[in-house]
Length: 312
Ligand SMILES: NC(=O)c1ccc[n+]([C@@H]2O[C@H](COP(=O)([O-])OP(=O)(O)OC[C@H]3O[C@@H](n4cnc5c(N)ncnc54)[C@H](O)[C@@H]3O)[C@@H](O)[C@H]2O)c1
Image (cartoon, rainbow, N blue to C red):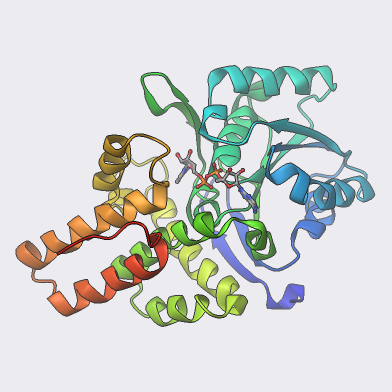
């Protein structure tokens, strides 16, 4: 896919507009794109122990060739890295590398890395730019866009953080090819949810994506456009508009916690939460049983593993 075939979604925040580029082979374009936006800056890649070995080199090469440095900081893969301890460790490594306020943090990974590295960027030297390179479906359609960064504490998830918008998001769908099958499929819960709430026309594209990944750039970009619209209307969640995208999400969180973290993947728990929301919508809000069933079938067939079956 050439650059002209990439999809560009503009996040038109008046104080910090930026672009989300969705396409193929975008990682190797990181250097020139960042150099154009931040000439004379130095970059540091923050990634995790799964993604770094798979995709770190192409990003580092691209940054080095553009004269932006090629330092990589790798954190352990997994939710536990979203912590203050890890935040401090990444910051201290950056200080030791001699990175100053003319630095750009390059967040290469899923939502964990995006939230952590975004938070580091928000506080490092009181704020440096962050470029998001999301590598999971969840991070491409949701977490990389909107500037919500942060970490967990023992008391709860995402309790510490900052709003810090990225300067650029490059969602390279080629990176999804290395996702384990279960992680790839659970990401579709978010997409199916977006389709159910905002863009029913996307259902056909979702069905196609199951057999033909060629439609992924368009599908991801349509989801980013939905998220971007909400972010622009309610950047800091003061109006509660992000709740428009909830639809079973909070119930899913409760299911995820009740099952015990690690038993269900996030998207799988969200699928079950959506199931509850669909049933409520049929009994209380006039959703037709056929439409509810059409959404549920896609979740059951695709986002949930075959080991999880829900009886009527
Ligand atoms: N900031 C926001 O607005 C927002 C929104 C939604 C979710 N989140 C956060 O996002 C996190 C979940 O994100 P996630 O689902 O991407 O999880 P994740 O970042 O933990 O990634 C899932 C797993 O896949 C691996 N991985 C990632 N990309 C890969 C690739 N291309 N190939 C192979 N392996 C890969 C990771 O190492 C990890 O083991 C949660 O912490 C959640 O709170 C934030």
